[in-house]
Image (tube, rainbow, N blue to C red; front, side, top):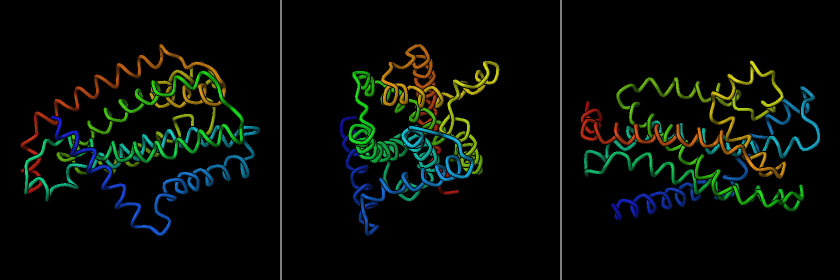
Length: 253
Protein backbone atom coordinates (compact mmCIF):
# COMPACT_ATOMS: atom_id res chain seq x y z
CA UNK A 1 0.00 0.00 0.00
CA UNK A 2 2.84 2.40 0.83
CA UNK A 3 4.31 2.21 -2.67
CA UNK A 4 0.87 2.89 -4.15
CA UNK A 5 0.66 6.09 -2.09
CA UNK A 6 4.07 7.11 -3.37
CA UNK A 7 2.97 6.33 -6.93
CA UNK A 8 -0.14 8.53 -6.62
CA UNK A 9 1.90 11.41 -5.20
CA UNK A 10 4.67 11.12 -7.81
CA UNK A 11 2.21 10.87 -10.73
CA UNK A 12 0.15 13.83 -9.44
CA UNK A 13 3.25 16.03 -9.14
CA UNK A 14 4.47 14.90 -12.56
CA UNK A 15 1.09 15.76 -14.13
CA UNK A 16 1.19 19.21 -12.56
CA UNK A 17 4.70 19.86 -13.89
CA UNK A 18 3.71 18.65 -17.35
CA UNK A 19 0.57 20.79 -17.35
CA UNK A 20 2.50 23.89 -16.30
CA UNK A 21 5.13 23.26 -19.00
CA UNK A 22 2.52 23.17 -21.77
CA UNK A 23 1.66 26.87 -21.42
CA UNK A 24 3.76 30.03 -21.61
CA UNK A 25 2.27 31.36 -18.36
CA UNK A 26 2.67 28.00 -16.63
CA UNK A 27 1.32 27.94 -13.09
CA UNK A 28 -0.28 31.38 -13.54
CA UNK A 29 -3.03 29.74 -15.61
CA UNK A 30 -4.20 27.88 -12.49
CA UNK A 31 -4.99 31.30 -11.04
CA UNK A 32 -6.11 33.08 -14.21
CA UNK A 33 -8.53 30.38 -15.30
CA UNK A 34 -10.85 30.56 -12.27
CA UNK A 35 -10.51 34.37 -12.17
CA UNK A 36 -11.55 34.69 -15.83
CA UNK A 37 -14.31 32.17 -15.25
CA UNK A 38 -15.56 34.23 -12.32
CA UNK A 39 -15.26 37.49 -14.28
CA UNK A 40 -17.79 36.26 -16.84
CA UNK A 41 -20.40 35.51 -14.20
CA UNK A 42 -19.59 38.73 -12.35
CA UNK A 43 -20.31 40.76 -15.49
CA UNK A 44 -23.58 38.90 -16.03
CA UNK A 45 -24.91 39.01 -12.48
CA UNK A 46 -23.42 42.24 -11.13
CA UNK A 47 -23.13 44.50 -14.18
CA UNK A 48 -25.83 43.33 -16.59
CA UNK A 49 -28.46 42.07 -14.13
CA UNK A 50 -27.37 44.54 -11.42
CA UNK A 51 -27.39 41.95 -8.66
CA UNK A 52 -24.92 41.66 -5.81
CA UNK A 53 -23.70 44.69 -3.91
CA UNK A 54 -20.87 45.31 -1.46
CA UNK A 55 -18.67 42.27 -0.97
CA UNK A 56 -20.16 40.48 -3.98
CA UNK A 57 -16.75 39.85 -5.55
CA UNK A 58 -15.50 37.94 -2.49
CA UNK A 59 -18.88 36.20 -2.18
CA UNK A 60 -18.74 35.07 -5.81
CA UNK A 61 -15.02 34.24 -5.83
CA UNK A 62 -15.35 32.07 -2.72
CA UNK A 63 -18.23 30.08 -4.20
CA UNK A 64 -16.58 29.68 -7.60
CA UNK A 65 -13.28 28.43 -6.19
CA UNK A 66 -14.94 25.85 -3.98
CA UNK A 67 -17.12 24.73 -6.86
CA UNK A 68 -14.21 24.47 -9.30
CA UNK A 69 -12.42 22.06 -7.00
CA UNK A 70 -15.52 19.89 -6.93
CA UNK A 71 -16.67 20.23 -10.53
CA UNK A 72 -13.32 19.80 -12.28
CA UNK A 73 -12.33 16.86 -10.07
CA UNK A 74 -15.60 15.00 -10.65
CA UNK A 75 -15.53 15.62 -14.41
CA UNK A 76 -11.93 14.50 -14.83
CA UNK A 77 -12.27 11.48 -12.57
CA UNK A 78 -15.29 10.27 -14.52
CA UNK A 79 -12.97 9.44 -17.42
CA UNK A 80 -9.97 8.39 -15.31
CA UNK A 81 -10.12 4.66 -16.06
CA UNK A 82 -10.86 4.79 -19.83
CA UNK A 83 -8.12 7.44 -20.21
CA UNK A 84 -5.57 4.92 -18.87
CA UNK A 85 -6.67 2.01 -21.07
CA UNK A 86 -3.22 1.53 -22.63
CA UNK A 87 -1.51 1.49 -19.25
CA UNK A 88 -3.98 -1.09 -17.93
CA UNK A 89 -3.04 -3.43 -20.79
CA UNK A 90 0.68 -3.12 -20.01
CA UNK A 91 0.82 -3.43 -16.22
CA UNK A 92 -1.58 -4.26 -13.42
CA UNK A 93 -2.55 -1.44 -11.08
CA UNK A 94 -5.53 -1.26 -8.74
CA UNK A 95 -8.09 0.80 -10.61
CA UNK A 96 -8.85 3.07 -7.66
CA UNK A 97 -5.41 4.61 -8.23
CA UNK A 98 -6.52 6.34 -11.45
CA UNK A 99 -9.23 8.56 -9.91
CA UNK A 100 -6.98 9.02 -6.86
CA UNK A 101 -4.23 10.53 -9.04
CA UNK A 102 -6.67 12.95 -10.68
CA UNK A 103 -8.11 13.91 -7.31
CA UNK A 104 -4.71 14.60 -5.74
CA UNK A 105 -3.62 16.60 -8.81
CA UNK A 106 -6.71 18.80 -8.66
CA UNK A 107 -6.38 19.19 -4.91
CA UNK A 108 -2.80 20.43 -5.16
CA UNK A 109 -3.88 22.92 -7.81
CA UNK A 110 -6.77 24.05 -5.61
CA UNK A 111 -4.51 24.55 -2.58
CA UNK A 112 -2.30 26.94 -4.55
CA UNK A 113 -5.26 29.04 -5.73
CA UNK A 114 -6.97 28.86 -2.33
CA UNK A 115 -3.84 30.15 -0.59
CA UNK A 116 -3.81 33.16 -2.90
CA UNK A 117 -7.49 33.75 -2.12
CA UNK A 118 -6.74 33.79 1.60
CA UNK A 119 -3.99 36.33 1.01
CA UNK A 120 -6.48 38.43 -0.98
CA UNK A 121 -8.98 38.33 1.90
CA UNK A 122 -6.34 39.45 4.40
CA UNK A 123 -4.80 42.21 2.29
CA UNK A 124 -7.82 43.55 0.39
CA UNK A 125 -10.92 42.62 2.36
CA UNK A 126 -9.09 42.69 5.71
CA UNK A 127 -11.01 39.69 6.98
CA UNK A 128 -9.22 37.41 9.40
CA UNK A 129 -10.89 35.49 12.20
CA UNK A 130 -10.29 32.63 14.61
CA UNK A 131 -13.03 30.78 12.72
CA UNK A 132 -10.43 30.17 10.01
CA UNK A 133 -9.24 27.35 12.28
CA UNK A 134 -12.21 25.41 10.93
CA UNK A 135 -10.81 25.48 7.38
CA UNK A 136 -8.83 22.19 7.64
CA UNK A 137 -12.00 20.39 8.77
CA UNK A 138 -14.02 21.92 5.94
CA UNK A 139 -11.39 20.94 3.39
CA UNK A 140 -11.23 17.36 4.63
CA UNK A 141 -15.03 17.03 4.46
CA UNK A 142 -15.13 18.49 0.96
CA UNK A 143 -12.23 16.27 -0.13
CA UNK A 144 -14.16 13.20 1.03
CA UNK A 145 -17.30 14.40 -0.75
CA UNK A 146 -15.35 14.92 -3.97
CA UNK A 147 -13.64 11.55 -3.58
CA UNK A 148 -17.00 9.82 -3.12
CA UNK A 149 -18.69 11.43 -6.14
CA UNK A 150 -15.62 11.18 -8.37
CA UNK A 151 -14.83 7.55 -7.48
CA UNK A 152 -18.44 6.44 -7.97
CA UNK A 153 -18.45 7.91 -11.45
CA UNK A 154 -15.01 6.47 -12.21
CA UNK A 155 -16.35 3.03 -11.28
CA UNK A 156 -19.52 3.25 -13.37
CA UNK A 157 -18.56 5.25 -16.50
CA UNK A 158 -16.45 2.44 -18.09
CA UNK A 159 -19.63 0.34 -18.22
CA UNK A 160 -21.78 3.24 -19.51
CA UNK A 161 -19.56 5.67 -21.49
CA UNK A 162 -22.53 7.83 -22.46
CA UNK A 163 -22.89 8.70 -18.79
CA UNK A 164 -20.10 11.26 -19.25
CA UNK A 165 -22.47 13.43 -21.28
CA UNK A 166 -25.05 13.30 -18.50
CA UNK A 167 -22.36 14.10 -15.94
CA UNK A 168 -21.24 17.17 -17.88
CA UNK A 169 -24.78 18.52 -18.18
CA UNK A 170 -25.59 17.53 -14.61
CA UNK A 171 -22.60 19.48 -13.30
CA UNK A 172 -23.73 22.53 -15.27
CA UNK A 173 -27.15 22.31 -13.64
CA UNK A 174 -25.58 21.71 -10.25
CA UNK A 175 -23.40 24.80 -10.75
CA UNK A 176 -26.48 27.00 -10.76
CA UNK A 177 -28.13 25.05 -7.92
CA UNK A 178 -25.24 25.32 -5.45
CA UNK A 179 -25.77 28.88 -4.22
CA UNK A 180 -22.69 30.28 -5.95
CA UNK A 181 -24.43 33.38 -7.31
CA UNK A 182 -27.00 33.89 -4.56
CA UNK A 183 -27.65 33.25 -0.87
CA UNK A 184 -29.83 30.15 -0.51
CA UNK A 185 -30.65 31.04 3.11
CA UNK A 186 -32.73 33.98 1.83
CA UNK A 187 -35.11 31.70 -0.07
CA UNK A 188 -38.53 30.72 1.34
CA UNK A 189 -38.32 27.70 3.65
CA UNK A 190 -40.26 25.36 1.36
CA UNK A 191 -37.97 26.16 -1.60
CA UNK A 192 -34.79 26.24 0.49
CA UNK A 193 -35.31 22.65 1.64
CA UNK A 194 -34.90 21.35 -1.92
CA UNK A 195 -31.67 23.29 -2.47
CA UNK A 196 -30.14 21.78 0.67
CA UNK A 197 -30.51 18.31 -0.86
CA UNK A 198 -27.41 19.36 -2.80
CA UNK A 199 -24.49 18.87 -0.35
CA UNK A 200 -22.41 21.50 -2.14
CA UNK A 201 -24.82 24.17 -0.86
CA UNK A 202 -23.87 23.27 2.71
CA UNK A 203 -20.17 23.15 1.85
CA UNK A 204 -20.11 26.54 0.09
CA UNK A 205 -22.17 28.20 2.83
CA UNK A 206 -19.77 26.81 5.43
CA UNK A 207 -16.74 28.31 3.69
CA UNK A 208 -18.49 31.68 3.38
CA UNK A 209 -19.48 31.66 7.03
CA UNK A 210 -15.91 30.98 8.10
CA UNK A 211 -14.08 33.23 5.62
CA UNK A 212 -16.45 36.12 4.99
CA UNK A 213 -18.66 36.33 8.07
CA UNK A 214 -16.28 35.27 10.82
CA UNK A 215 -18.80 32.67 12.01
CA UNK A 216 -18.51 28.96 12.75
CA UNK A 217 -20.15 26.63 10.22
CA UNK A 218 -23.23 24.51 10.86
CA UNK A 219 -21.48 21.42 12.23
CA UNK A 220 -24.65 19.29 12.25
CA UNK A 221 -25.21 19.92 8.53
CA UNK A 222 -21.55 19.19 7.81
CA UNK A 223 -21.82 15.94 9.80
CA UNK A 224 -24.57 14.81 7.42
CA UNK A 225 -22.39 15.67 4.42
CA UNK A 226 -19.52 13.73 6.01
CA UNK A 227 -21.71 10.68 6.59
CA UNK A 228 -22.99 10.73 3.01
CA UNK A 229 -19.43 11.12 1.72
CA UNK A 230 -18.10 8.18 3.73
CA UNK A 231 -20.96 5.93 2.59
CA UNK A 232 -20.45 6.98 -1.02
CA UNK A 233 -16.70 6.48 -0.83
CA UNK A 234 -17.10 3.01 0.72
CA UNK A 235 -19.49 2.08 -2.10
CA UNK A 236 -17.08 3.39 -4.72
CA UNK A 237 -14.13 1.46 -3.29
CA UNK A 238 -16.24 -1.70 -3.25
CA UNK A 239 -17.23 -1.26 -6.92
CA UNK A 240 -13.70 -0.45 -8.04
CA UNK A 241 -12.38 -3.50 -6.21
CA UNK A 242 -15.24 -5.76 -7.27
CA UNK A 243 -14.82 -5.03 -10.98
CA UNK A 244 -11.07 -4.44 -10.92
CA UNK A 245 -10.31 -7.12 -13.53
CA UNK A 246 -13.30 -6.23 -15.70
CA UNK A 247 -12.03 -2.76 -16.57
CA UNK A 248 -9.08 -4.10 -18.58
CA UNK A 249 -11.44 -6.30 -20.61
CA UNK A 250 -13.67 -3.31 -21.30
CA UNK A 251 -10.64 -1.41 -22.55
CA UNK A 252 -9.95 -4.15 -25.13
CA UNK A 253 -13.53 -4.37 -26.42
